[in-house]
Length: 154
Image 1 (tube, rainbow, N blue to C red):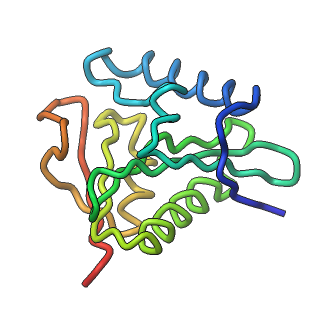
Image 2 (image 1 turned 90 degrees about the vertical axis):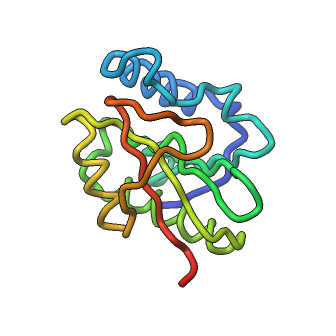
């Protein structure tokens, strides 16, 4: 049974999954274009982090970072290698969108890579209705990044 729970980021399993995530992002993207948050960044008060479990197995994670009273950013979406192609990414993104709506945000944003490696992620975001947009927040134009947004209210 799949469950998605708020995580305080203290367990070794989530630390290992996030370490794997950061290492992979840093191996693909130049340092100035790597925007993945480390554990300290994810522990900030404006960030809520969720872990996804199938039974006792940690299969993925994702976070929302509040940007202001009406918008948030999707951060740290990751599916464990052994759980890929099992719908974990869709479950996480669906949960994040639902949480953002429940919190009353009008808009969600995200930044992801522009390289071919990130094509499946971009396809998932488009499937959920995200559209390409200009850089937001502190992001600047970068050939290694794309920015996307989803309006949560009509």
